[in-house]
Image (cartoon, rainbow, N blue to C red; front, side, top):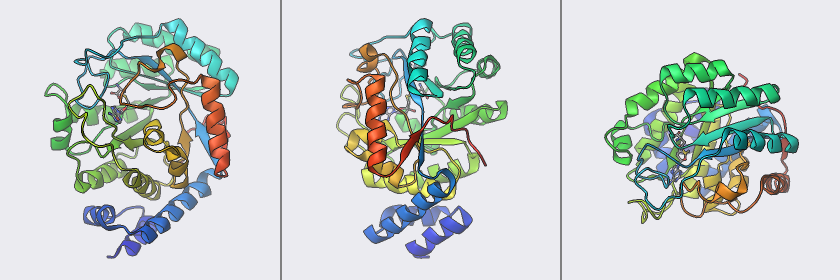
Length: 347
Ligand code: SAH
């Protein structure tokens, strides 16, 4: 099949085989890319119109017990500045966000044992008590089945846990031996079984990644059927062993967003901060390639710089209101409008 036929097949059958996906990633021309982009944008517009969902991102802790080789807050990075927000700080970030129109709060952090089930469930309950009309999304890494069940019962609605890469051997080159690909995937499947709206996702251009790995990521998402998929370019962090690896390509990330949209028409697909970091208009381009979500930063300003997953991360200077204003303007500039709708997943 030629690339045009593969794009047509992605549109009509919402899938393609591994060899076709690899071919697309390796050989897509500019003209073919533009066709793919248009099909993906139309597919998103048919579902979401020109509405873009927003999620308020609250980065609750830069402590992490894990040691992912690519990540700036890995435990062995002695230069990382560590902070954690108190329950009161988390809830008051939500207060600020609610007043600005946010109806989804994403609580993300390193795997910080300080946040026991008791503490975390209390925070979730308090947010849901104050704002029963809001969705609470957690992104706290791998927790036990019991813990995830308790957080669900406390009222958490959604959980983001990127699989990072669908190749087990590749996963093992990016993570220390005590971390397990199988456990990551099993946790994702468990999250779906419990009832969470679940988000998986992967980095584009991470060290050692091949086009075959990316094709496997696409097929993994197709098989898992998560409600959300977060993808962004790998960006090096100067305190990690991958400091000299170039960041992931803008073009490849945009192509993958489009393919994901065609393979999973209803999926919630953010134009991520990492995409905005490698290109001044990266997030706008992401939307034009089929993304439909943005995640402005709601973290207290004094800690933003310290949630440093990679170098040059954007939005570390502004406050929440400024971040939101900036994104509203950016979306308007391409003919889209931010909506305060909760933005749940619909088939
Ligand atoms: N501890 C949580 C949250 C991790 S941070 C968890 O394990 O899920 C959120 C995401 O940032 C990660 O899933 C990873 O995909 C991304 N990330 C980390 N380091 C990065 C880097 N150097 N470049 C780009 N993305 C990175």
